[in-house]
Image (spheres, one colour):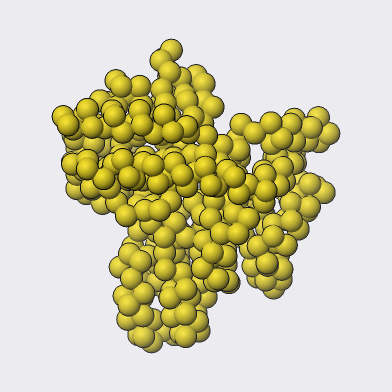
Length: 384
């Protein structure tokens, strides 16, 4: 089969199962609302949970940083791309989350890939939650280590795998809040089992940082767990982009010396670091924003209780409605768009076959009447 034939076959198969993905050109997006093709929608597909991408202090910090340091870093951090803004942000993150060191990455995907690619060697094993993010599972499956997946959020399943002997080291991989189900990992139990087996724990808290725990310190802080490797990302609660690895001194030095994803990537712009410092300050002072978000979550869950689709158990900003088949999820998403509500349909391979869903995401920017409008559209689509 030629390259062209292979490509055409894959594309035809994707279309045949209603799995075709298409980027939408957004004309305007202020978290609460977005405009597509001249039509304004109430927006329920944003991960900007606190609305900080639109915060005047965050925008002003980026503008001032760009005026001082330019639009880009100009080089890898290992050459001349590591500025005082990078250093200060790393120091603030480490102090805030109680770690010796923080290392910045250009994305959460890059951070996860870098850490797992670097640490896992042939005699080792990686035990990952079955529903862990693609960046984690891809890195683990492409590493020389043995990958085994434990049942989602089931410490007993993990304990059985940990009980089997291994020649090398063990890395347990999970998330704080899962991106497609919205549920939280039982981190205390997972950490205890990992520690008992002398393994290391990696937690990707992309969807917990900023919105849970004291001062928004995230899922691990909330559950009083301190993993050896904590990944926090800045495209959700922080409202910007990028990521950081939190770890001890020796691990940070090891990553700096050997992690190719870090060494051979241009550093994030210094101006972005300035915006992230401003976002961090808003998060630390953001109890009112978090309270507003959790009030919106409670309002939606109470109102959605009688819908015919399964509302998955989640106390996070991610509120999935399980629909089932791809075509049904797409049709429901289109019905909501016709009612002025933008809610994306999530389909395999992002989620398991037969579990296509609407991934409703709520933010502190939403108003009570926005929630009510979405609920009314859902009940109308259900014929109730």
